[in-house]
Each structure stands twice: as structure tokens, then as C-alpha cells.
Image (cartoon, rainbow, N blue to C red; front, top):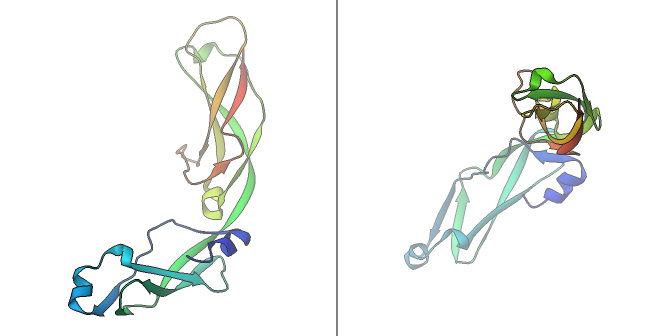
Length: 172
């Protein structure tokens, strides 16, 4: 996609990310065709007037050889999603051998900014902070906890970015 910067400036991204595939028929001298490699053909295109949803990527070809070509279809349908940013709550998930002994967990922050394609950000229910308690201690202690965006089923949502990947948690 040659106008990927224009898409980024309009907070649009190709989603779902897939390999863009086009069928192309090539004709030329047999000697050219026998020595042809994928580096000899560059298929590219731009999305005119990009909008969220279905768009058409109109295809063109650059080739280093003297060949004629024809596309089965001279465009590919590409789906664009708006990049959005949302604050999501962080909830601690206490695990480990001594999880029942924990009275309180105080997180460094209670929310985090999530960004990515709208469909994925909307899928995020909350941000899980994994707190591992594997030693028995009477004191309070602090540890770094990993933040994981999860959906309503508790499954990780991949493809989104968090402002912070880790935060501190004070455990008593």
C-alpha cells in the first residue's frame, strides 16, 4: 500500500492484517519468463479517499523485465479500521501458593490507555495485572506486574497497545 502514511495520518489501519494477494497473468519472451523471479515484479497500489470499513486498493505493476501483464482483478478489497484510544480499568489477579494470605493489593495506577483498531479496543473488557505471590511474608512488598488486555471471557486480546506494559503493585 503506497499511501500508508496518509492512512496513518487519518488514524486508519488495515485490519485484519492479512497478506494482500492478487492474481496476475504475465506474458513475454520465453527467455524472460524462464529467468523471472518474484523480485522482478512489484505489485503496489493506493487507496483513494480512505474511510473506515471496506475500501478498494487499485493495483499497478513495476517490472524489471519486458513483460506484459494483466490482473485477474485490478483491485483488492481492503478493510480499514479507525485507530482509537480508550482508558480501561486495571484489575489485579492474585495467583500463587500464598494468594489467600494477601489482604490488599494497591496498584500504581488504576487505569491504562489502550490503543489499536476500534474493533479490538472495543473487545477489551479490562486490563489484568498478574500478581504472583509465591512466598510467605508478613510484611508488605512491592513487585512489578505485567498488564494484559483481556476480553469478557478472560482471554488475552492481541493487537492492541498499552501505554504501560508493567506497573508496580504494593502487596500486604
